Length: 200
Length: 200
DNA sequence: TCGTGATTTGACCAACTGGTCAAACCAACG
DNA sequence: CGTTGGTTTGACCAGTTGGTCAAATCACGA
Image (cartoon, rainbow over all chains, first blue to last red; front, side, top):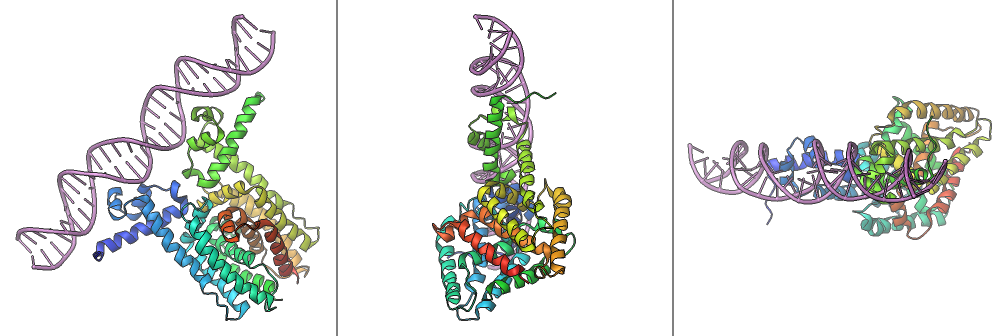
């Protein structure tokens, strides 16, 4: 029998989560402070703690939401579709995720960099299971000669690495590219890279 | 007329830098504490501050050392060598760097993730100049038809992304691979990926 | 308009932070 | 052995941290 959230609750909770995403994704959990988050959300610190019981709680909610969005594209990889098309679509979806949700990407990166203390268990169970399952599909395509012989795990790693690079290393990418837009060129390159790799 | 460092100075400075690398690479600058570093180095906090004037100073020394090692492999890319061989060698050198110096890779990743406040200027000048120069070489090879048509910048990004992924996302890689060793498979995959991409 | 529950705040706390300092300690060389 | 300069430490400090609490304020339905 939980009460439905009021208008103000919705607004403030959303503001806090967005502010938390800003701050945590830049400084990591330990490097972020409640004052920073409260400021960014336009609230006082005690007021913030009226909506979330602790710093940890904000971080946890953000991580949980993140993991869903993050694993969705891979789940959508369909074993009954056309192999090359499926893998290319996955890679492009992942790249779009980096473009549209860079803060989420950096939050994830920060968590992993710090040794994934809060999600290591999920990585070893849910993520591993998902990757193994989709990896098996790719392995099947590979064995059947429908794509080139590749190690599915490293193929997936390479897609993760390349696409997330544009969000996580944004500053570096922009420093090197100057004022050129990163994502158009990245999409073209991504397309060529995997089309060539996967062609038997 | 600076005096030569004593035996003890050498030992302790090295211990502090190694400890600082451990801690900073995991928690970032703001998330790391002098107590952590002092503990890891086996010294008391005041003792640590006898060798380095501040937390910032330790971090700065580490970043400076890092940047040298980090840009070296790209500098070695030789415009007079065989195009495919040169690029492949660069990629493999970079992968070896991730395998042998994962802490340095994570220190760099942390710095970039946090917006590169301490090295943004260097990225925009030194790094950009280096990448532009080597990019021009690759562009030349591409124009001459000696390798396939690729955007040199994104090619370099993809090499960075893929190789650093194994150091920076180590926890995730190991969670997914189970007990399989990451780097052997990565090297094989890397080889195939770029050989196929670069072949005209 | 009033009452009630939701919301906000200022004052506060203990633990931790980066950093200082004088005093104690120790290594080594004459 | 003594002394001199490098080394280590405990006590300390001011500012920051995550978090609490009672009191004040506000929104809104009756």
